[in-house]
Length: 339
DNA sequence: ATAATTTGACCCGA
DNA sequence: TCGGGTCAAATTAT
Image 1: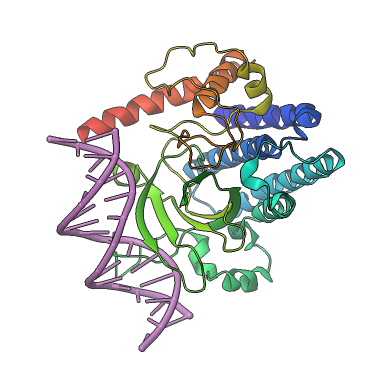
Image 2: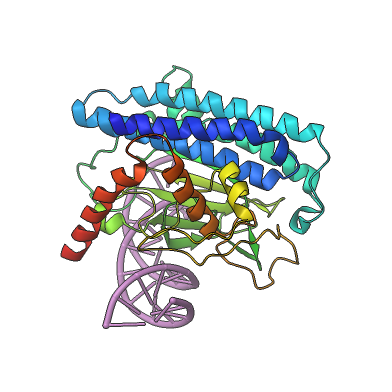
């Protein structure tokens, strides 16, 4: 339970930071978005932790997640609302975001809208009675969402018995390929398909560690027809593996990021570091240029990592998450060798 | 050599 | 039967 608290503290910190830095980032929707996303993920992680604790202590009904998520959802809603209200009060985003020039207004509106929508994690709404309808409209059945159980007869192939939620992300434009937005996990593409009535193909990803840890997490990435700069990411299943065994952690907390962005401090020790680079050229150029393919919102992950490290080290919470993760990571690495 | 991606085929639910 | 989701062999990248 202690680690849950750490996760919660982290989330609170992020939310607090976001609030504090709101005026500074009001004219930078991308970083703003990133920051909100960070908060969102922090709460999501905390939720996941709670669930793990809960499920390990007693195999009871999973409806607890509903409560947790509702709290998270409303917070995110509030955040997104406030944040975008704030944004609208300020001058529209700087002119450096060339990829958004034509639709800048539409997009920001859409981002606002989508973010609000995204907090309605579909699977969390099955509590009420009217939710079945919603689920059905989403192509899910109640039974499917309740839990993940092995199909009695056919162990093979799909069966969307996984939770499903959709989020919108600004799509980094690398040529005309869609770069799935980074979310701190590593994904492996296993399919792509043309979808009827959709202009762009849908890509299917699953957790890289699916095989090793039987991580059920999957996601679909679908570029929107009318606004290709936005991708709709549908997540299914929750990660049971540790975040980023090989990938960078989630977005840097913005204040930390801003604080560090000017200082090219080298990161502390780590077995895995990304090239230290800061790229503040937000979508500048015509996209396809030679950009860091992994950069998002104009900030390379090195910064994310750096910020992460700073955050952890600076955090007042006694045993940092690094400690928490250390052991499990080692364990996993160990397992990996055994496999 | 190993890992990731691509892509046509296959499976399953509606 | 059709469309979406997944598999898996071939291909490409690291």
